[in-house]
Length: 310
Ligand code: HEM
Image (cartoon, rainbow, N blue to C red; front, side, top):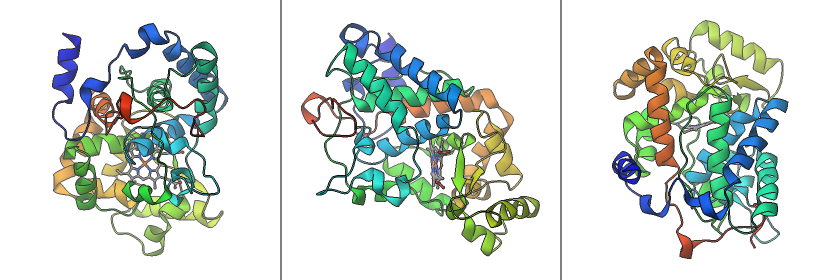
């Protein structure tokens, strides 16, 4: 019954292998895996709450490049520049949290729990820690061995308009509604001035004037790496991101565009009005995102160190 309902839930997209994964994958293989990840994440977030954003974003960047296969965690070598050294990934955060969980899990059950699954669980635990919805993570992903800088072309740049976003997310099997709800991940975290300074220079008319002035002051006082919250409550998972868009307070072009396009605006309004709906749709979309191009047993392995190939 449970399996059936999740199949129904996930059956409206394109390129993911539903049957490869299940909720109880580690129940017998490594029963403490889920608990170890949760404890490690909770401890890390107690020390630095801003890492919740980093963990969520890492999962997204893993899944959108070659599927959810932990490839974003692999370090570059002298022969290969890996995904994590692409400009789109240089500000990813939370690698050490994944490393720590992996180390503890390896101690308990060597060679069983994939790095890709650890990222998926850590992202969920980060969302919960920040006040967002709990959802069961499907598990059983294998780790990939390819991690190339050029593949990160599949990550959306901050300057995309809604048409381009709809198309890019559509290629991964997401509907317009799912694009909007996933963009709600920007309820957590920050962006660097480098990611939106063009909007300030050319005074983007979709940006609220007061907000533009406030953000300009912050960026002018610092440099390209100065960070500004993606919404007003950057460590709380709530629907204030959508309310910000209604006021012209979207930080990135890719945020504010969702309120300017009739196709996406209705969803923004809905989530701004109804946080429970946002939470419900978000956890469904995350489940789907976690299934993008997952590798089955013969297509990957379980890395012993998430940063290196075995
Ligand atoms: C819709 C297309 C998206 C675009 C264009 C986009 C782009 C960006 C950019 C440019 C940043 C700031 C990076 C920087 O300045 O260093 C960022 C941050 C972030 N993104 Fe996205 N993103 C998108 C979708 C998503 C999705 C689907 C999620 C997760 C579900 C997500 C989660 C995050 C989080 C949590 C942060 C803050 C990271 C931190 O504080 O370390 N993003 N995103």
